[in-house]
Image 1 (cartoon, rainbow, N blue to C red):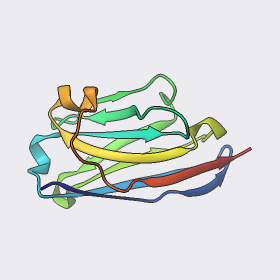
Image 2 (cartoon, rainbow, N blue to C red):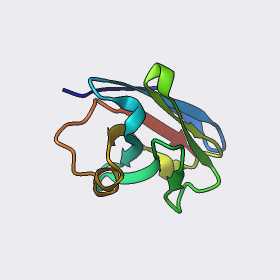
Image 3 (spheres, one colour):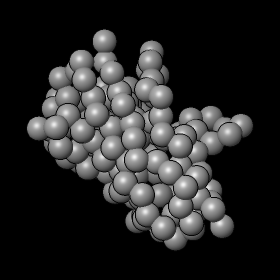
Length: 121
């Protein structure tokens, strides 16, 4: 059973920065891709960024140039550095792990509790 624990969210003013962390257990972390997702009130969960086992990255257009995803396989942890935050980045942020096609589809059986990011204008 994969366990995902997200942290690092908070309240920040527009233009500010946050760094999210996600610790994964119960999975062979190093061989799987990792994805960060977000869900704003009244909206569907969307994929924000993902990183492959080889370190390749991909970003949603809305965050490209502002967010950076990275991973530390020794710590079973994936990070999301968020800079130049905007009010529209306000959402609950989640991570998950699996093959790239599953990361892209987002069809996971379980999710962590997420971490709330609120950006004030």
